[in-house]
Image (cartoon, rainbow, N blue to C red; front, side):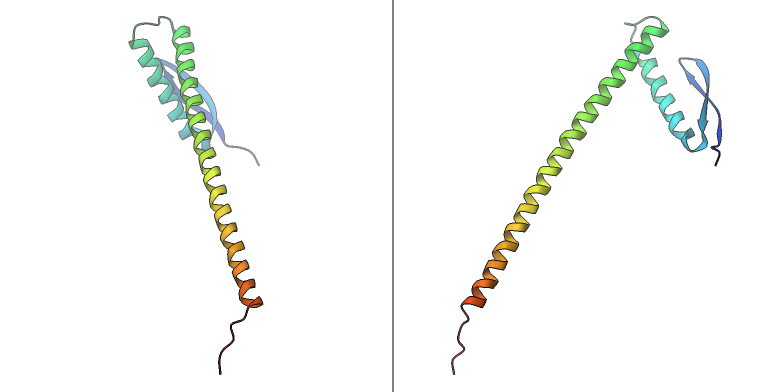
Length: 115
């Protein structure tokens, strides 16, 4: 099964790049290129960094920092979810054990029905 790969034209810092891409990934590539271009434009217009290579490196560092912060936040969120699920599972298990113990007490001590 051959993949439908064709070139996609993207523009970053007013330079055009032709990138081979699968059809299913075109939209993602365009969004990524637009995001990168936006961030590089911000870095360039800030005036503190001069030169395309330096702008690219500083932008890459900023995006990497964003990614790592997101990963940390996501990891913390997943950890909180895991601990909440464990607490809920323990409560369910405790409730089932108590219910089973109550059933055993009822079987062991039947109440006599008067008559």
